[in-house]
Length: 58
Ligand SMILES: [Zn+2]
Image 1: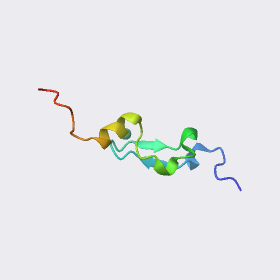
Image 2: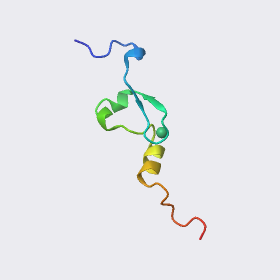
Image 3: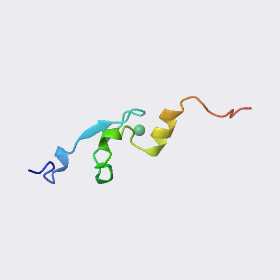
């Protein structure tokens, strides 16, 4: 029994926790889809350290 039928419309979609952008399941995420919460590394980094810039205006 196949989970994906090769039809992109059946792929799961998740929304980025940081920018709320919809992310469609990708092959590279097949092993870690449950852990994917951000659309990009950038969002992940921003989300991890919000408002914790290192004195940009010092
Ligand atoms: Zn994002």
